[in-house]
Image 1 (cartoon, rainbow, N blue to C red):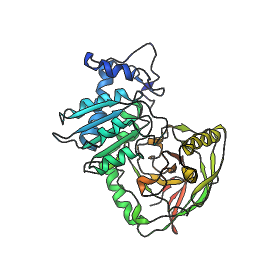
Image 2: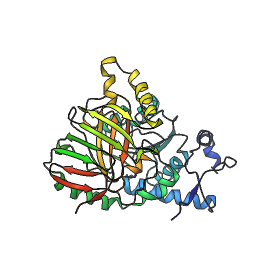
Image 3: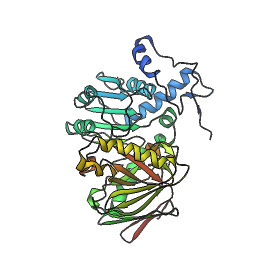
Image 4: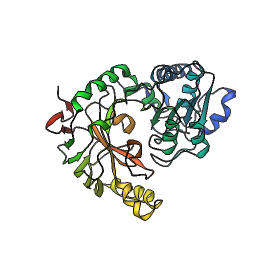
Length: 372
């Protein structure tokens, strides 16, 4: 089915109520480039579709209860989604606050301190933003104080109302629960693909996170939306080999494969088109903000996981790409949210589209297909 979205015309502005004029000024300052308006639908229909998806988030995924403190954090690229979530959340609680913060510079960039302080005072935080807040001190502090958090990095209107967001999250929760027996007592992970990926590393099987199911209804829980992946911290210093990303890197569909050489858990070389140079610059800037002895840690392979969401699509938005059934991903940078020691303020994932994955001697994925 063709996507019901097209690029927003610069001549039109979203319709908002007079009471929302301050939010409108910020939101329209930087409209997203991806999708922005639903073709052949009037404004009333657009708002209805956004409202249906927002209700799925606030009522089903977060299960907002009467009287709970709720904070919606958006930025200029996600303002309309933020407003839909705010309106839906107020059906459950009268303690809902919407904040529009400046767009971050990269995934893992800390939000402004006033926003971080607000997050610590909430029971629920929902964050549709251009760049991920998942691996930030602000989110870790909010969770420590008892909040439950849903982050939606790179969220667009198209993603919000279709694809992975339409999955049955209760069914995904069951699938992830059933995976626990497969993962039990497996220590060594081996990933290969036809493009040259050949990488091995150790894990602690008890560290597998199977909570990314979209149901985030208890204190100190965190999920990405759309949800649907199993992920783990690679044991620091144990990863060696080659990773070839052929799906997406960050929020870009790759035109050419991107090859990374890993020694002892650290990326030591990158090969590819102009993307490789951009990555070196981006991570170099992050390293320059650290003490000299810590700069190498920006190249830590911080996370490994595989997608199990049957509705997710490869769209160039890594939030959804890494959830697509049969893909796997590696993230580079900060691993502290998973219990690691690389506190580097940047965390960027790349996706492999058709991997083969072994846990010890047991193959679980072959060329992007799960083995029954």
